[in-house]
Length: 408
Image (cartoon, rainbow, N blue to C red; front, side):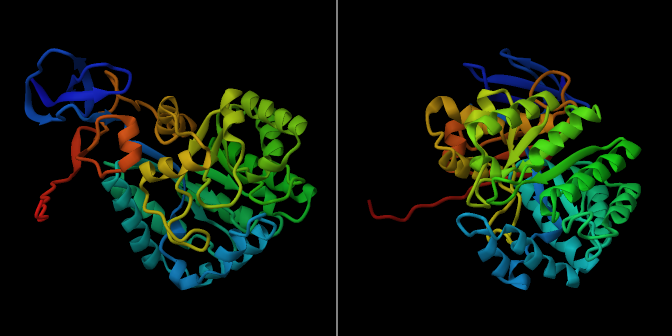
């Protein structure tokens, strides 16, 4: 007898519903025959999948839009993104009023939303610069400890204002990693010159090597085809033997590159084992996703922002992100929905190097029982999950008491 049995679970890649047996927080059996359990959940033929993974969220800024106003938002959302750098500068004003207790409460609300919608793995970017200093890091690391039994949070020490441009930020990043941050972040495109961008990338890799950490870079988040920091990160990752340990985020200027240069960058990304994390809903441009995928580059989707200076919406609901992406990418055929779904599950899991992830014997018993029969239906309706399990423990359950009063 198993501690938990999930009956009639429709798994991706299987024609008929199956039963899951869970013991000790792990899936130990997947079978077509009946299984006995101390606790039994009937999925009723609904889709059961891995939890969602959000590889890009600026957690220290969530729910700050009303405080900062929409000046940065207007600059960032300009169609050609020529004023993206000015948007970053305008958005930095909110950090002058950073308070650890406020960041803690805002971020906690966002994390609870993530759990509610079945997102159990996040990479949280936290500003570590001469304005924010380590205020946000303390708040988010505290939340990481409090949620660690149910939610995996990789905290990124992120010098939003630059490394050369914001002298002293590299030391703050170093300190943040010493305090417990999991990933070293960077944003080389924000620097004032190619030389400074190169120094920025080298400094971030230097810290990463010292602490044996992965790196995550926001690159070319602008409407300037001369911005080439995506290539810079890929080349450096190869030189530093950091293959498979780097991600680039946004890379929006790739949409403006010549075909010849784009092909060069894509091959470098592939060689470096770099995942490209896209957030097409938060800005007017996005990297050429179809060409990236066709060439074997791992592509993931992120939430990016939740009601902050750059984006007025968001709720850590990755099905919503997949739905929006299917429109931006024009991927609406039946054979494309699994690819989009992979971008919010297995692809970002690979980029975050998650262990024991998936619906298979031996993996963690973390899964979502959807209120849908298929991936297509899940993306279409974005219904809240029926159940969310983390390591064998039920963390969210939805009961629906719906009544109609139409005289039909």
